Length: 284
Image (cartoon, rainbow, N blue to C red; front, top):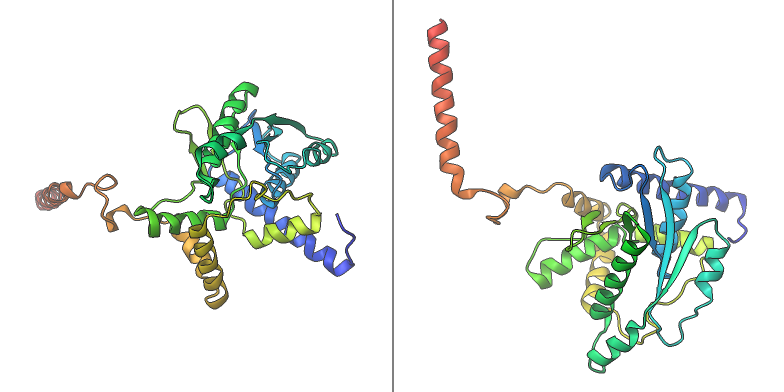
């Protein structure tokens, strides 16, 4: 970590406390970590996962429950990947870690035509490898570094391009019902994480070693939200609050609300009122 002047040190402490508070609140709100959990922290070498590991290690010392942390990095054998960076960094910390080696890069290059984005398939292969390894080491939770901005970007990606209203939940059960995935940074702002990572001087590993371009649709959404944040202070907070304040009866999904049962509900309410009136009359 770089040396800071007193004023800058004070601001750093405020930033770190804010990230810890927001992470702790998300963990509490969604009951992410319980007594005896073994939490596998997926470490990519990016700012988000470094911050997640650092904050969880700090919270571990003062948490009301006992839990274990183990950091795991998946080396996908991308050309130019600095294999020594993460082991050297993790050895300097008081945390258990594993470097999992799987050549998913070759599979991606074989399956995806030249010039097409490889991020989708790469992500699926990475997820499958990490989920399987979590079972091997007996991890009860898998912690990912997605933050508030990721959740909102995903919401608008699905809304604009997928025709659905869904995001990244702070806590979920995997499709095979074997793994519980948690996102402790769900309440944290990306700009706070970026500033924290820079001040901590984490050894960042770029995510585009494979040469693939970032999802252009996500980049458009990111820029839209950043523009809103500048022009309309408070809008991003309001949008995130909306994720926690859903009214199924005010939407149009018949799987979430029984629209066909409204008549029966009305008749039941009317019958209850008549019964109450009859009771009051008989008691008068």
